[in-house]
Length: 215
Image (cartoon, rainbow, N blue to C red; front, side, top):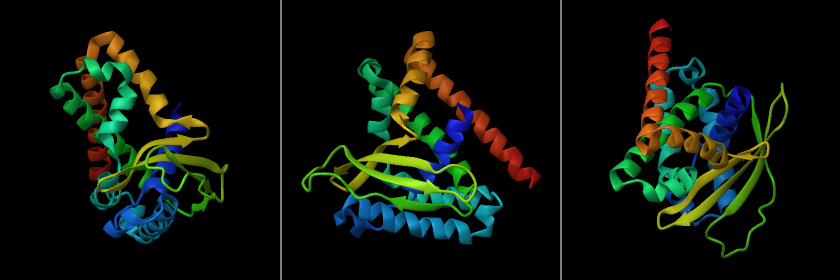
């Protein structure tokens, strides 16, 4: 599971790191992903601070290039499944916030791992008028290690295309988290899940702080 999550984090970052140009909202989703992702790859490779793990630089890249273009609300609701309807508006807000933070740590750790990877995109297979469930398929090519299959689903919103799910080596992100969410909800309800996510985020934040101080 740890290996899967590390590969997932890297692949997600390579695949979704982008969507920054507002005009890109008019582009086809695969064209958008390819163009902007390559720009971000180049930026990460050229920034020595990111390569050395500077969390400030990494966080700035995540905030600017990734977060505005991921539909965290839909992603969280799908991961929570049927339990989402049982959550109060305040609980839903907290779940989105904690899940967002968890993914931010995932993205941040993965960005620091970008070295010499390359992306290879496959032809888009979607109806021209499709606005939801559009799947863009790609592969992450590494000089060492296996090729990583990366597919992701997008929806077209009023503000442009947004990602709400990813598939790494045949496993969808939402399905992976859905099992974890259900387990925590079974033990402590919605509040139990919120606490579990908050505790995980605190641990990740503490580790990041220690790493920054020691560097």
